[in-house]
Each structure stands twice: as C-alpha cells, then as structure tokens.
Length: 348
Image (cartoon, rainbow, N blue to C red; front, side, top):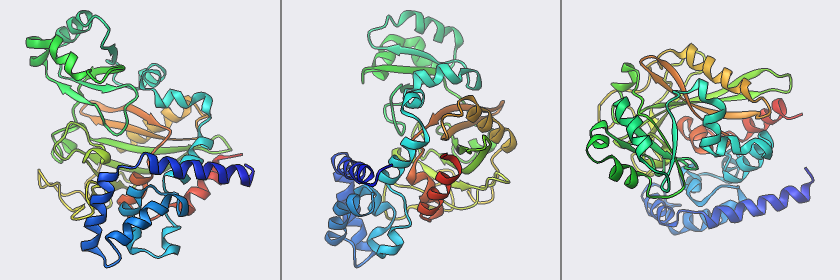
C-alpha cells in the first residue's frame, strides 16, 4: 500500500478512535491511574487523547495497556485499534467481511459446524410460529442481535418464561430493533461449569491461512462470565491465556472493567483457580477451528469462538476483528512484532 494512503488511513482510524471513545470510562480510568502511578491522572488523560495519533490506540486502550506507566519504546510494542484495523482489512477481503460481521450470514454459511438450532426474528415478524417451536422444544433460549458486538444486547429467556408470557418476553428481548438470532441456550462441559456457571464459557482460537495454504494456530484464550449472561471482556467477563499445545490455562484471569484489582488467580464468585486447568476436549476444539478455517480460506486470519458442551465443541461465531485487547492483555505483552510476522506468513 502506498505510504500516503497508509498515512491517510491511520489518520482516519485515529479520528474514529476519538469519535467512538467511551469517555466516561476513559475519565474513570484516568482517575484510577492516579492511584497507580505518579504519571497517572490528568497527565495520562492528555496522553490518552493524543494516543490514537501517536500509537494507534484508543483512549481506553491507552489505560488498559498501561501506557501511562510505560516509556515510548514500550508503548510501540503494543497493537491498538488502528494497527489492527489496517491489518485485518488486508486479512479478510471486503467482499466476504460481511459473512463474519453479520451473524445471520455467518450462521447460514457455517450452520453444520454449529448447534443448528438458530432461528432469525425481527420485531415486525409474527412471533407465534417461533414461540410455538420454542415451547415445543422446551429449552431455555439465548437471544443476540445479528450485528451485535461484545455481547451487547444479548439475553436469556427461560422455558418457563416462554410458556407463561412468550410474546411479551420475546418483545422485550428484541426491543432494540433489527434482526435477532434465537437459539437453544447451550451449557458448559462440567469442567468449565465448575469455574463459571452463570453463562456459556467460550474459547477463542485464532487461525491463519498461510500463503502455502496451510492452517496455523496463532493463539487461544478462554473467557468466563463474572455473573452476567455473556462472557465477553467488554461486558465484564474474564479472560485467560491458553497454551496451544496442551489446552491448559497458562495464567491468571484478567478483566478490563477497571484498572484496579483486575487480575484474578481465582474466579471471584466460585473461588475456582484458573491456572493449570485443562480445557476439555482440546484436540477436538482445535480440529473444529481448523475445519472452520478451511471453509473460506480467502479469510486469512479469523478468531473462532467455540463452546465446549457436554456433547463436544460447537462453533459459535467467527470474528474478522478478533480483538487486540483479548490478544495482549491476558499475557501482559505487546504483539506489534508478532502482527508483522503474521502479515509475512499470510499475505502474498
């Protein structure tokens, strides 16, 4: 790409970071940073505003990555929103990006690797045919917006709610408008359920299709709910690093809701330890990620969200924007150099 075009895109990306910034959260982070470093507070807030242009990070990422207490050279080792956006738009062509951004399209393309129970519903649809099918199935259901991100707008309806006031419950769950995916609520494998019983825990496995057409596993993370119906970091969940070879959790959990007390050796609610526990059926998890990647090899790098149920792993989603925070924070290490190595392996 021509350097002038790259510079222009970086400027656009930096502006996007400022427009989309969560300023109440950023201000809270600035206040918290004052208790953690003498370079925190107002000075750090100014740094976070300049960070999109200097480092390609959003104001929130400036604090999450601990830039307020890092020197310039250390900050350059981390990848922010802008750098990931520039890379990921090359990893996945625009012509197929919608297959991952739109969950209805993704579900249709990858359905046989998934649970298979998903149905689509909008607020203008007659709910009775759907409710009749859901009541007959007798399951609790999970509902999420087809264009949702980070668990936003997701909810759970019990089989009892569907029986007693299905029309009203469904209307409330889909009040945000647009298309929703309605599917059977899956349950964790017992080994994962002991750690976090409130929601389905998911494994993010990121794969790359190399220029030689081979599938590489880049990294894996596991996510656990912290009392909500979703496990996403952005919705208050916890994330841990997972060793690719063994499937064993290799470090404590991290959270991104606060800068203070954000590392957890044990789950805050169940008291279960994280490090050293094995993700069940790990070989099958990797096999599912590989089969998913082979479905559409034009998508060079994708983050696959996989659930490990009592009956085995199931694919949930594929993400073309697979997460700079989830990649770097659980290991406390910037991945800018690793991103450059990935580009060499996957881009012709």
